[in-house]
Length: 344
Image 1: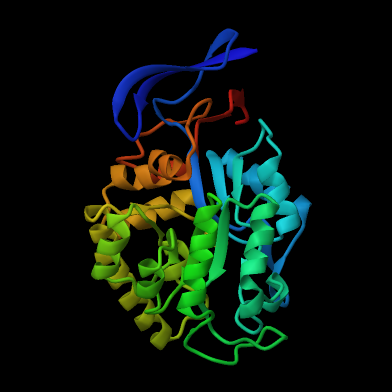
Image 2: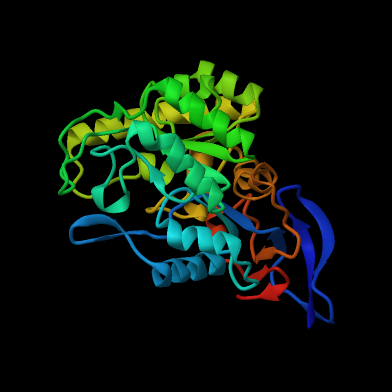
């Protein structure tokens, strides 16, 4: 066994310190700055794309994805929807060589209102039974698709903008059921229904591109979270038309104003890669949208650990340069130790 020794500046607090992880012969770690592991709070370990668009992949895909996340310094992942046979098993099977997995299981959405190859539709009258099944199989989070554009069985778009998927009274029943069993609810939302979702007690808003100041006040008052997934929400897309660019820039401006207010109102801002970004990229976007680098680091590390009921014990990710001055350094750690084992 090895004791890994770090001497330098511990982030996000910024304290000069000496940290040790493990037990055995002491070995120094490279780097002068460290965080106790990064957290990807909006991840889809089994979601990828092929020539037909988004689809679910199996355990080999998820294992490879976790290996890449680990090498990037991610010590924990909240998987918010995917192949439940893979993600719930990962969540229940400890492994010292990969990030901790917290899993929501399947995407909960009705027929025609999510990518057809990525979910088994859940009719409104079946939703509470489906929620029971997820929790019985170990889901500690539930992923509710609260709005989505109408889609054809072949995956083509039938309707726009997104429509509400379930009546709000049913969503309230889902929240009450989840909370009675110690689970929490994450809701995908990009429309004004976000206000009603927050009112009935949804725990975290995912994306939330039209979230308002009043929504943030309510969410923050009860310690809720928001994962804006900025890499996905405002990232430039290939062959972008002038109209799409204009909408994207307007969305970016709105989210920038809301991200700053979220911290003021006590909303736990989280960093999530979705399927197109990275934790390092999300930190960069959070800074560009109004957080200080320290606030963004909290969102991607200690703040997320606290909100998700995790600790940074046994984890260290070190960097040669100060991420507060060079956020891009988060993409290239000098070393990664997960659960006492050096993996990079």
